[in-house]
Image (cartoon, rainbow over all chains, first blue to last red):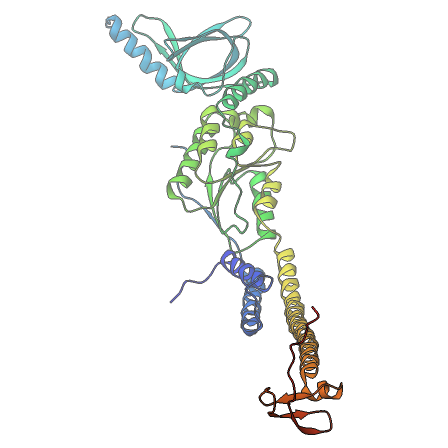
Length: 65
Length: 364
């Protein structure tokens, strides 16, 4: 089972996918699939940004010694 | 009371001193400062009435000292085997505005000359941070502000916090250990050294030479958020990014998630028009190519017509009927006196006998 992608990885994926639409590689045949994929990532990101919390861990390591 | 040898007496005194004063902190003015053999540091710490001789290794000297500077020294009192009193220093820091400024300028010049603060060394922080190391005192107000702003702005991050002292003689070594901890594990993408505002004395630990060197040599990019905007420490100068306050460090490290959400929506909305525009552009390009092709075909047709017309004219000029119409005749048969030849004119065919033959003079 693949590991869940981080927000950072999803943002990078969205950047790549949307950049494609402005690149020379753009073609109408692939555009619809790419568009659907970008929408899916965007929805996941919106959910992550609304639901996720930061995990703050105070290390048990004693730095005084 | 039993008598003792000098050695025994010195041992008893030292034991008593160690029991009574295992670690003493003294504040005074430096006098007779000198470094012997590049290794040993000697100076006195004095006030108006008294003076204490201090000894330490050069390695332990973390900020420059000069005669006249006010310092805080921590050390252990001891009687030497020659019966002299000695104060072995374990840590020393300048205190007071004048001394701190002097020490700051001396060390800044030294480290700057070594290139520790070069702009070319500065690295960028990751755009979307996922793992962050924080070095701070978890009880400090600056730390609470930092975490609060981080949590308000961004999410999904794993933040590891190394709790250390952020002021005092022990702070530099603790912060160095925390820096080493993060660098050895290599799990975080950036390290933030955070400390809220304080007096110049409170913040002077961030001018510790070994700490500044540790910040400068960190494999992981370091951001400092120390004190207020007006406070500048040597750690700030050595860090990859200097934030003016802990809150500012939190803002630099993170994106505003509400702005990012808005931006995501906008980008997706824009894709609709991008597809429409690209499709429209392709349609226009195809139409343009068709128009161009039609134009070329038209030009070719005109060209072919001209060529055909020219050939028709040439052929027409060579048509024998046209020659006969102009009054010429075609003569067939052998040209000998007495022979019969066949003559074709425009409207007649004549058989005629050859009477005489003369050579004709040609006009050239």
